[in-house]
Amino acid sequence: MKKLLFIGDVVGKAGCEFLTAKLGGIKRQYDIDITIVNGENSAQGNGITRASADMLVRAGADIITTGNHAFRRKESLDIFEEEHIVRPANYPEGGCVGSGVRILDAGPYSVAVINLMGTVYMEPLDNPFTKIEQLLEGIDTPNIFVDFHAEATSEKKAMGHFLTGKVTGVFGTHTHVQTADECILGGHTAYITDVGMVGAELSCLGVEIGPTVDMFRYRMPVRFNAAEGDCFLCGTIVEFDEKRGKSHKIERLIIR
Image (cartoon, rainbow, N blue to C red):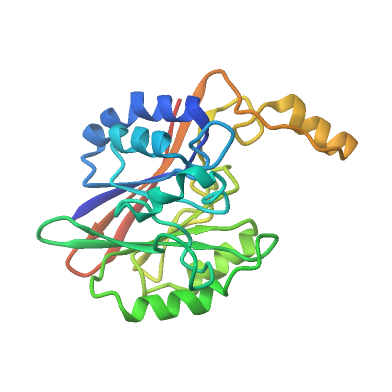
């Protein structure tokens, strides 16, 4: 049996620093073998840069997934050529940097990490259900984990059921609020609708409260800044059989 730790969206400098302070201890305490971190908001102001990606790696991330802010920082697009960084696989083929699948070689076994983005209330990318069917045909490890970066809980739930028995785990990201529906679908696939986030807990999804409230009150454009203050870390730990790619246990994690 192996243990995989998935960390939800890391928000800004505060989130990166809190992850750096806590991740090593978490990995030792829970005997973690593989760590995946969603880093699409890790740069100050959102997006991901080489500096923020390097910080996540130094903190202990093996693979960094992203989402709708993946390409927000044009000056850092070259980071998606790195083998440990994934972007949503259902961006249209041709002209898009990076890959939506990464294979992590862990010696006697390997793990495939797939990044997908939902299309309900999101950008009109290729159909994520069709795309992952195509991707699964070319993956030769039974250990497959999916970061489904989506807005609608219904779309996330549908993806979890669609992939039941086909992948080892499906982790929802993007909405930054950890859900309490972790389960093993079909006795095989670990699932949670949203893993949560890493960043200032007293915030609106990691950004300052005041501008967010003003946006909803006045419907005027505002500038979002990462919130400061006491942080928390949300994640999910999955125990899986690396020979069969079958999950046996999923546990939510919140560190304050």
